[in-house]
Length: 183
Image (tube, rainbow, N blue to C red):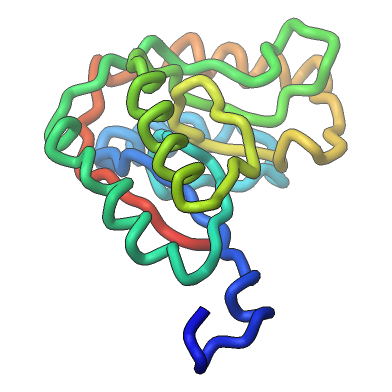
């Protein structure tokens, strides 16, 4: 601890996340096609990304260096075309639990890069806040996993299901950059 830092300053942590920023043009068109079938109260998510690590915390003084290290995987993913498996809801529209996300299911294995990034975070005294999720690009959502969600009516489920079945889904999306940032 330097003479100018107090003990409480060295104990402060910051939260951050890492993600692949995706090309947005095709995703915007897809959102525009689906918007009329999505409940009005759901939020349109305009930043197209695939979370690598959706949340972690670190001692504040380590954050700049760790972000630099975590972003170093960008050469591996830059301009990569990632296959799109289709549009789906979470939870599925025919499940008993309420659906609260419309997303693009993406075909990419992030296990190795996640393990590498988790190792860096642990080395610098950090820990994960949220467990990684299956690779996807969120299009619309009614909240997060811990929130209470109202079930869709039969009419809403039917309309959303039909829109998803008829939407023009891109075959791939392009990674524009790899990012790590605080929140």
